[in-house]
Length: 260
Length: 260
Image (cartoon, rainbow over all chains, first blue to last red; front, side, top):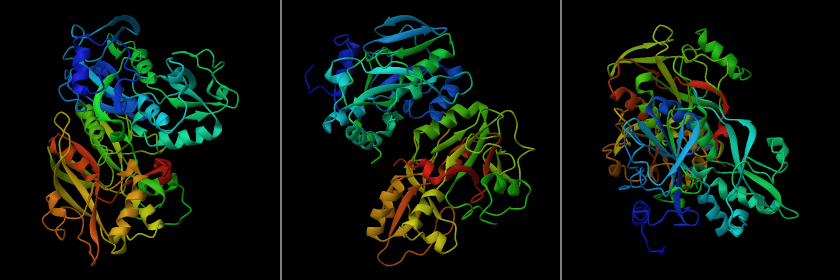
């Protein structure tokens, strides 16, 4: 994909099914987002859940019922502009599809949540290793023993992503990712993973295991998969999400979301 | 009021009507909050409005319908623990009351939003003047020509508070208040107030005028009154808010809300 595409042109390529793969590494420097669509009956509860758990569920945009054009990407259509979607019915994964025109309705409310791609780009720009990118793998993700603050029928454990770093690199990573508070921000934990209830780092609950080198410690960030688990846990008749790694590319730049 | 009171004891004094005045300067270092209670039918829209306008409306806590005990102040009761409340009916101020036990119902949803007291304390700790405190006045507040992003029936202009500072002090104030992103954060504007549609700084829309000394410029922060105007503008059958300056004192400390 040529680098000169605008974000709008990129979304049109995706809409026309000329790009159907993951969006990792695509449009570096632009904000990509997790997508969660829920029935409007639970929209207040789900919005409340995200508000109460901003580190795993940082809200970039919420649309009104039936709306599909987000403020952070004028001209876009959330029903067609992601490369791949997942359909959950009653809490069970039912299908992976290329668009959700036949599933979306006036009854659905769309949430766009921050994603770790933003701070990974910043880590790399600062010379820090991002092992999952180096090894061309999906990031390692783990379900922890920490519980998010629930809202109505919506609840979930905190899910974290992990990147191994040397201790001095971990300090720098705290500084760098703190700026990106809308895309998970500073780590939630570092060091001994057993305190998070993670028995074996080599067995992630989602994504792939990555190498941890001698002298490195695991550093854990809150992860957007928390929001997916929360929406799915309520066993709603219909929940629509992005497929892992197949995110929504917005017009925002990563720097637009920094706090400093 | 003796300094050794816990926040819980302070709220009990207020509940027992032994403290009925403004909470300005009370419990310095502890987070005080704006209160807005709206009918649950519009709770999603109001939450969406706050989410879309986080600088004027930073969400500290949202309770589920009918609940009165916030997570940020265990044991508290939002119906009784503020010194003074305002009751609005159909968009019109109807009464000021000492508690809202007779007004609150299972139908109401409570929002607690960040307040500028947190960053004023930090400004003073850094030797910066806070003119409204020096002159024992309410801060100057102005309705601007900027429109918040609406949500359903909820809309409002951006309301700002103003504190005069010398230019070098304004730079330091940007640094200090940036840390307090949950209590309005960095200024939204500084300098020529006509660009905000403010014709005369000596005629604030709310609060009192303060002295602006030679060499000082006005510095403007997003203000929580925006949320009150938004809730009232929808002409709902019932909206309950704190009375100006009579805030809810939480258990949180200002530093708990800093981003760095």
